[in-house]
Each structure stands twice: as structure tokens, then as C-alpha cells.
Length: 94
Image (cartoon, rainbow, N blue to C red; front, side, top):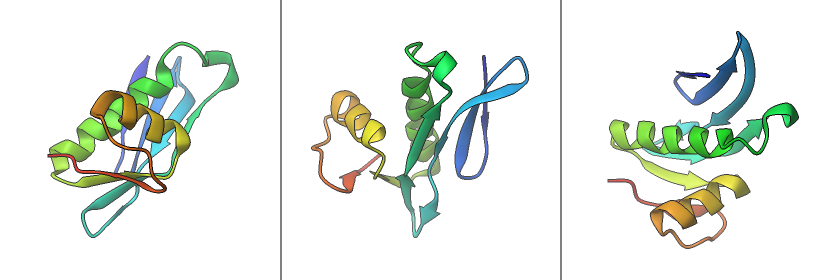
């Protein structure tokens, strides 16, 4: 499994095929995780969790703040960063 980071998304690649992604466009220092996707054939393997973890780490490295409108990312942030789920969820990343 390979993960490739772009400006506003991270793709999961298996055998040269993109099998998942997380997107996080930025505006004024706020990155909004608005989409997490994993191909049905790969679900249940922790790929979505790894994509969101990598996105949050990338945002943290950029010194930004994260918001999540994607329900999966909201749950991940609540479980792993102790953020309260609101809509959109807003969680500072320091």
C-alpha cells in the first residue's frame, strides 16, 4: 500500500490503482476534511482511518486548523483527538 500526498488530498494506492482518498481543501488556514472514500473491495482494513490520520498529520505539519464535514472524519477526530462532534466539527491542531 502506498499513500501519496497532494495539495488538498491524500490517495491510497494498491498495485498502481487508486483505491481510496481523503480530501481537505484549505481556506484562510482552515483545512476542511470533506470526503473520505475507500473502494468497497478494501473496506474494513483500516485504510480510511489511515487516510484521515495522515491528513490530520499533514494539516498539523502545515500549522493549520482542521474542520470536518465528512462524518467518518468527524468520528475519527472525536475518537482520536477528543473533539466534540458538531456540524461542522472544528478542532484545533497545534
